[in-house]
Image (cartoon, rainbow, N blue to C red; front, side, top):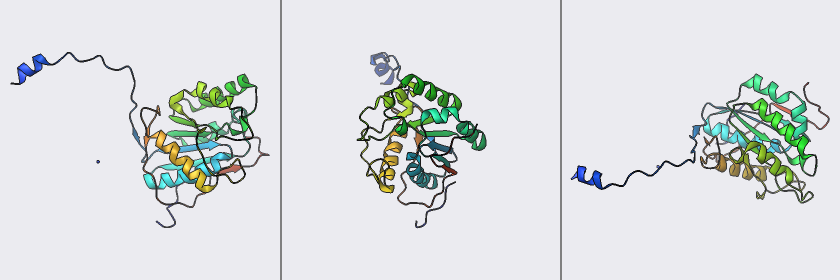
Length: 226
């Protein structure tokens, strides 16, 4: 839940001369939704830890309800096997879902199994507007095929590709608080663009930070709800 910050743009002849209207474009421009009063759910691996802190700043700034669930070390397969996502959806009834998964899937070659897991996750989200945030680049794993697998499942309009995001890291993997804030700011810049995001949502950037506690935070020994 959001917590308040600690410190805080002749006529008829003319008509006859006008050319016939051009055929309408087949490109669909999505309607931008106001974020106020939305219920936003963030779920994911350890990357969601830092993301959630900054997204809560946006929640306070823009007046929406924010929830986050972090599961350290989790993969797409873990979330597909466990019932945690469905549990959280039934618990808070989100109007928008943000998924941060893929870091712990990097390097695995069982792409068909990962694809099945991703499709299972998406089936649980159903018709709820969502964005899937792909993993940051990681120098230890050069094979980023999972990024393409996720994008192929979601479509480009639901996938934020983090491959080019440069964020400061604490351990070479996880972003610092400042790095995570920069990452979220870039995600939100993408989310508000109707020509990029299939479900654009309007959010103003906060110029403050907030105190925040995740709804749930699970360690690597957690196996999920069954």
